[in-house]
Length: 176
Image (cartoon, rainbow, N blue to C red; front, side):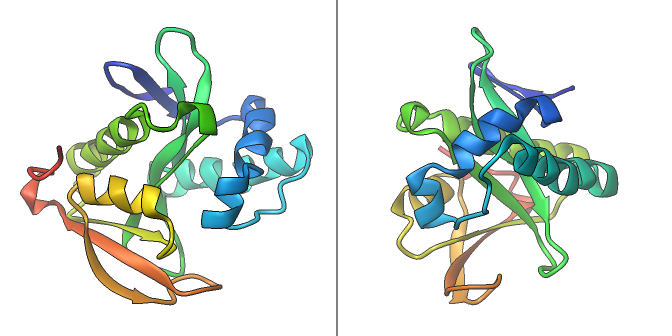
């Protein structure tokens, strides 16, 4: 099911058919260094992750992480979407891209579209992002999306993280 379409990308719900790609993406060295090791070692692990994470989120909240693919070729290049964790009150934007698709503006394009969808379709009034303080790539994207550093602390299990936030009343005016 297509959720969002941009000039160059399609974002759609993840399915078990995407499991091999998820194994590749979540085992990328940059993903592990910046997000964490999800223990995703097999296609079966990825199928469970998709079913227990994104698919359950679609049912519970009407949104979740989506597969991002190139519009012309259908080649998957990452994941992007909105997350609602039981441990945090706000809805988060999340994204990850395979190495060969980075630095082409795809992540920014997908995240901007996902956030606008959340505002227009879900009526979100606030969107946040949690990232490692050393993750300069993600921080730069979040800043370009108009999110501002709100505070540093422990928001999930593990190390200290940065919480970026956007008051969506501004309707993403600051996004460039």
